Image (cartoon, rainbow, N blue to C red; front, side, top):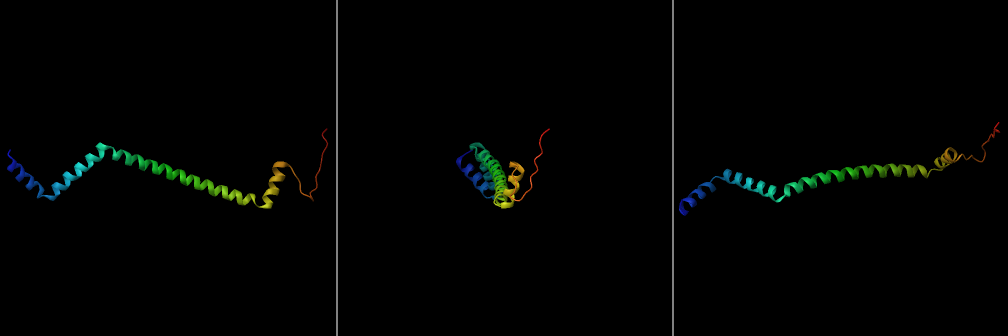
Length: 101
């Protein structure tokens, strides 16, 4: 095959845009796979999904803590916690003390 025949064959090939597009796409896919960009892109997508999930969980935790903080600022809540957990009584509460037998 001489240079002229090769040039004519190449020119005929280049006159068909669909064939050129297929070859370009094939070269593009092979280059992405061989240099590892596709693997890195997949890893980045997986990491993005994981981090997005963690962000959503953290936001839900923040909202829950904000609700607890609002509740803790309420004097009625503080009084109720003191009564329940520390066995304290209010100023006008009546307390019964039973002797142990």
